[in-house]
Length: 100
Image (cartoon, rainbow, N blue to C red):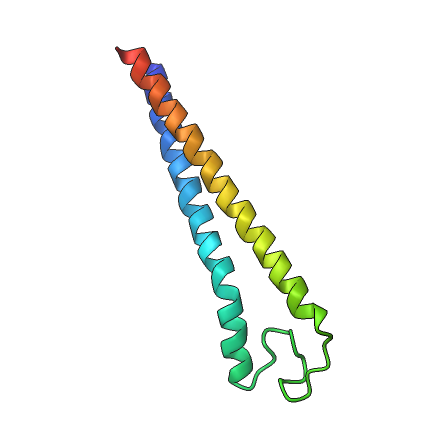
């Protein structure tokens, strides 16, 4: 009975980690929209253009660097979600077979 409880606790912790990674993925996906809204409002775009959009002298590579960084971070979070769900499925299958 103790092993079954351990599996249940592990599954709950895995699902909480998946929830956290899902929230991180949504936040990463929302960053470009937030930067654009901030720039359109006349602000600095959260530091992307320190002197505002009209006098933005950043090179063109700054946006590309941000896009690559966000893409890699989003891919890493989706990979983490996938691996955690695979682990949860394996734990559920193993605990089900042990109870038969």
